[in-house]
Length: 335
Image 1 (spheres, rainbow, N blue to C red):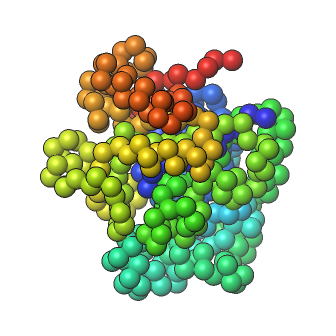
Image 2: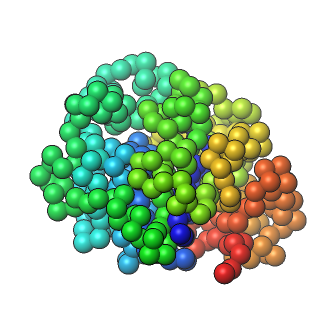
C-alpha cells in the first residue's frame, strides 16, 4: 500500500509544493490528491517557470499523474478553471462531487470581517464563511456547478483503488499544523484541521492505508497574519539573513524566526511523522545552494540536520537546496 501523506510542520509556507513536485517526478506518483482550500498557494518552480497554485495539486509536473481534489476541499470555481488552463491538465484532473464551493459572497463576507482581517490575518478569500456554510449543511457542492461537471470524480474510490493496485498515491495537505483549528495557535488559525489525519479524512483514505507521513519543515520559520511567532526577528534582520519572503498567493509579507525545535517536535508527534523534509537549507546556509548529495554539504549543515534528527527522533530524508523541483538531496532508503 504505497500511500504517503504530506503535511506542513509550522504555519504553512514550508515548501510543500516543492516536495510534492519532486516526489511526483522522482518516484513517480500515479495519483496526487489535494486537500484544503484556496487560502494557501503552493509554489512550484519547474523548467524555469514559477507556479503559485491554490487548487491544482503539485503533482501536475508529472504528465502521467492523475490529479484529484478531495471531498473535503473548498473549490473556488474560477480559480480552479484558470489553473487547469495554466497547467494544461484538463484531461487528467478530477474534483470530488461532494467538494464544497466557495462563492463570491463568501469572499465578501470574509473581507467585511475586520477582526479576521486585521487581528487574525485571514486571506479574505472566503474560506472561513464557506466552511461555516458547509457546517450548516447549506453549502453548494461541486455536483451542483455546471462548469465542474466534466471534472466530477469519486476521489475516495479512485485513491483507494490505486492504493490497492500498489500504485504510488500522495495525499497533499495545505497550510501547517500550527494553523490547525484544533492543534494550532487558536484563535490565530485557519477554519479546518490541517493535520495528517485530517488530510486523510478529506481525501477519503483510512489510516490503515497510509505507509509514510512526511512532515515538511523549513530551515527557519515564517508566518503571515497575527498570532505568536517565538523568536521573531525584525523585517530588516530577516532581509539581512535572506529569510524575508512574501506569500505566493496573496503577496503578504511573512514574519520570520529561527527554527524552533520544540514546535517541530510537537508537529512530528501530532502528525505521526515517519520522515522529515527540510526545505530552504540554502537560505539558512548559502553554501548548500544546488547540492544534490549529502556529502556535498558543509559541516555546519550536517550538524544542523543531525541535531534535528536526534531531537525529533525522525530521519530527515529530503533536503531542499534550491528553488527548482529537483534541487533536492534524497536520503530515502532505496528499495
